[in-house]
Length: 206
Image 1 (cartoon, rainbow, N blue to C red):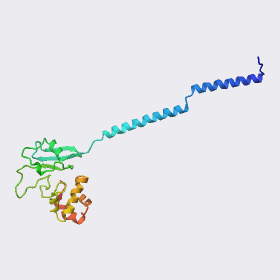
Image 2: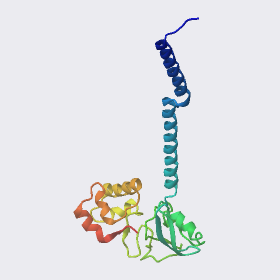
Image 3: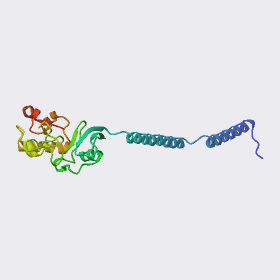
Image 4: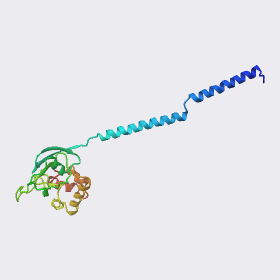
C-alpha cells in the first residue's frame, strides 16, 4: 500500500473537500439559464395580462350619444337617445315606426344624425302649394336649405353656388359625414368667405 507523507495526505483531503463542495453546489443552486427562462415566462404572463386588461377596458368604453327629437307621422313622437353613428331610420324605429299617412319619399332614411337634431316625418297631405317645406327634409320650417340633405338642384338655387360647388358639397358630406356647423362649408372646394357670407342665413344643418 502506498504510504503518503503528512503533506500529501493534507493535499488529498483538500482536493476531496473541493470535489464534494463542487458537487453540492452543482445540485443545489438553480441553473442561471433556467432563471432567465422563468423570468421571461413571468414577464410574458404580465404582458399578456396587461393586454387582456387593455382589451377589457377598451370594450367597456361607451359610444357617444346623440339626442334627437322625432316628430311628425310617427307612432311615438318624442326625444330619444341614439348611438353616435345612428341614421334617420334608427330614429324612426326608436319612435315605434311611421304612421300609414307618412310620406317617406320626402325624407332621407339613410341620413346620419346630429346631436340636437329634429327628425320630422311628413304626412302625404302635409302643407299646401305655397309652403311644402318641412323640418328634417331638404328645407327647414323657416325655408332654409338643409345642406345635409339638399339635392343638387336645391343647392344650386343658393346665391354663388353653381353645379360644381353644389356637387362638391354633396361629395363632402357623403365622404366625411354630415356638416357639424355651417362654417364647415369653408372646407368644401370652391367655397370661400364671400360665398359663405352670401348663403349663411339661407342654410341650416338641421
